Image (cartoon, one colour):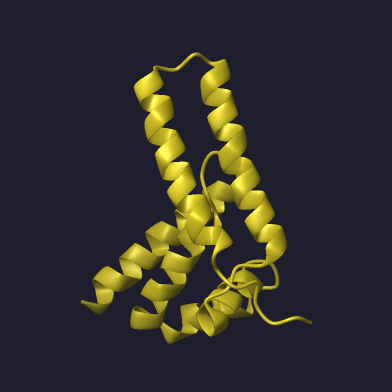
Length: 120
């Protein structure tokens, strides 16, 4: 089972790193999944991910506080809104736009109801 968690952690880490370059692929959710998988399979990789200067802070904020920072909330909800606007401008089918709108509303509600984390 440890090997499966390790493989999933590697997959999610790779997808998260792709998300850094590709605006339509989210980075943070994949990094959170990678951290969870590494916590179950490789303490060394889990520590590395948490200690990373760029990737580590949002993961630690989530693990320690169940929190999402305000800038991350703005970026996430803004990106989702931009994707919905782009879908409308591209003239996608109304069923697709409706499905996106519902999923975006649910995702945004979840993100916006998380605490901001400790004030620094």
